[in-house]
Image (tube, rainbow, N blue to C red; front, side):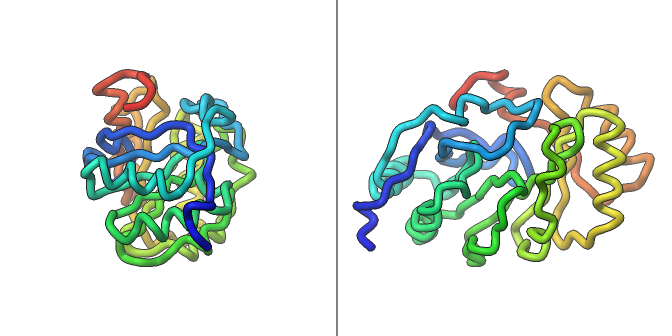
Length: 215
């Protein structure tokens, strides 16, 4: 099918550094798609639930190339909700390294497994209110270059994440990230005390720009 005929609803596009996960600090072109099937209590991109405009995939690809950046991040909302996103991924992977940020509630079995396509898979914790929506079979589809991320707000979240690590074989890097505004020192000390094999990382973009949109 001619990609000129395919459309995606895009919330915003911008260039910035990756603020979360194992690729933190890498300059990327961000494509935020509209729509999300979850309603996390601490969500910081609620504006992406509905806002956006329909754009041809060809136009999106052109803007990514024009950015001059090697890396492209597909985020949301939940980018895998729009069925034609896979057409976009296949177009982008010709010239870019791709990071797909997905919320863990949708199967990732259709995501390409090429070396330049990487998945950031959330596992929602109880404080989000959405932890029962997780599809843990997604862990079977993770490979080299992918990672799992837990957003931690309190002791309950921390103990929940520990239990998930104990009960599941996770073959990729694991990130513990505190909810914005929570003390990262508290989380680091707990991880060190329990000797967990995880990375504790902040939200770099918020440290730099605060809660400003589009950075």
